[in-house]
Length: 312
Image 1 (cartoon, rainbow, N blue to C red):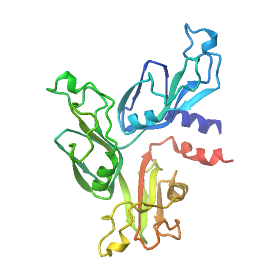
Image 2 (cartoon, rainbow, N blue to C red):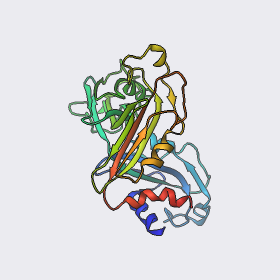
Image 3 (cartoon, rainbow, N blue to C red):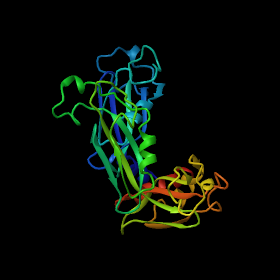
């Protein structure tokens, strides 16, 4: 059991940053997937140099920081000014620090400057959008030839970026998206923006078909996401009446649990896309099963047993 826990720790990156300083997350390969992000104090020793005991003695202080997920997920590198990042002060008078746990997960990325077209493609499988933002989160991307005042706002996020990108690309082998404020809401007037997308190439099968997941020898499946239902009107639509395609917010709540329990930790598996395996989230709608997964390298198979061991 302790051996499994040690393997889990080697997969997680932990960054601790004192309040008011810049927190930096990065991945050599893949993109950031934040597992937890908190602000507070659970130790009297961390970030305590030069601080009086009255500012470090409260070690029962913690609050979640959703902004870290929003700003960093799907990026290869992320810098955050922690000043005022937490949604509220969890313990007045205590000097706090930020703790972020994250992993680097395989994903394709696309960055397109304003006015250009983003081209996404899957050689195997279908596109499944992970994150999308039209805005600016650093001063260097798409900065060539731009005056400084057009690059200053690095806290610029379009509130509706994910929906149009997902609608245009999910379930397709290739797609293109126009990076412009005529498609997305303009989140920061006067700032030169870009469209940043991360996506997976997922396994996708229509209702009553079997999804076969496979990894190379020595690697094992790790499920990232799964849904049995319908989230667009074009996927698995051939020959189907409009009434069977009309509902596009259809999610079987047990999708992730079923696929994870049947496939995680295996080199290959099969999942039958039917309501006898999953719950039926939208009766009368023709559904499909979309699964995003990646293959873990040799030596971390035990990590996938942690879910089982933690329940013992």
